[in-house]
Length: 224
Image (cartoon, rainbow, N blue to C red; front, side, top):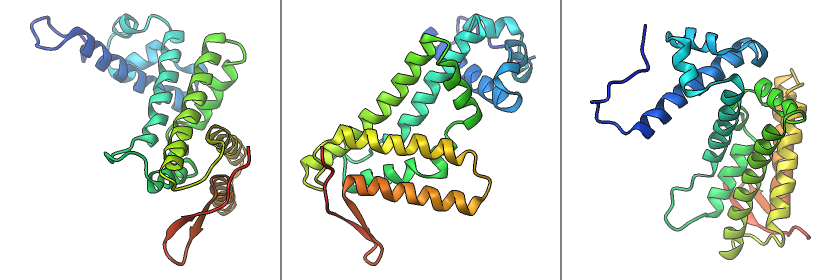
């Protein structure tokens, strides 16, 4: 039996230890819920997978509802990773392109299981707290993309008159695309439609992909 308990003489802050243990439990909850379905996931099953006593899991998350809220927050953190910019100079056109490519890629769609994502989405219609968390996720993603567009505008790399409107339209494409494509079993059709939606996102940004030169050139605008 692996114990989550750690003696007080270990040189580690209580807060950091708590965060580490909570993340372990959240990730295990995700795996159990993905495999068996959210309705069948329980604290007892999480404890069994982790090989710990259920009371230790309950010490960090008293109820399945608490775990659900924490997992939704975890979704947000994972999704926002695609906006990480490593250049000191700030956002470049290449960064913006990379983000669009990520949004319309298998990597983005695999960040979180579709079944769980839409299960929680359905719960949002019954539980105000989950609804608020989902709105936070969607608003944060849109604002992050809008910020990237604004920075590229300031550097005169693109010319998008309404960055927030552009970001919103792109995420309307993303949300609609993945819900529709989750029903598509033909891999070729899936890839073709995803490519089509991605190109529409580039059109919104006024970005023309130049296949011959292997780069991008900006042109066109998005009307307000």
